Length: 135
Image (cartoon, rainbow, N blue to C red; front, side, top):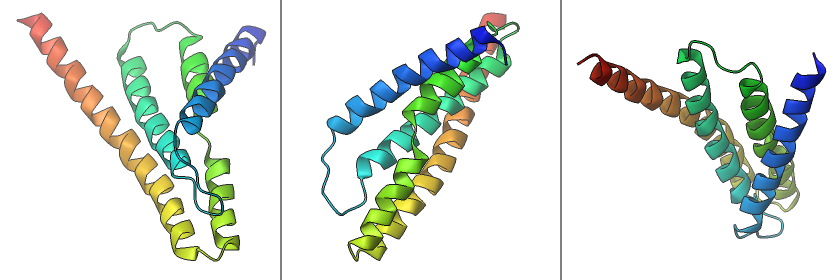
């Protein structure tokens, strides 16, 4: 990996982590329960990655640092599946297995649905925009 790509990923990762910290600071947290702010971050981040990837794949010549900066860096730093698992582990330890399992399912299923729905919606919007340009 080249130094410019590494720098783009690092800079994007720092911005994404700061955005995550800001969003999590704004969401209510309860000790010994799954952190639903983490679920929100992961689902939102996956929706944004769906939009980004669909948009970039349709561009004829995107800047070579755009995907590493925004996808791997910003959105990779924004999402946090390791924290989701830690939150679930904490909920299990607090004898709340139902909440732990619900949080794990919400993270995984929510993320998959979000990326798929966002990519699909973006594709539809971009197709419509392309059709309007032709007419």
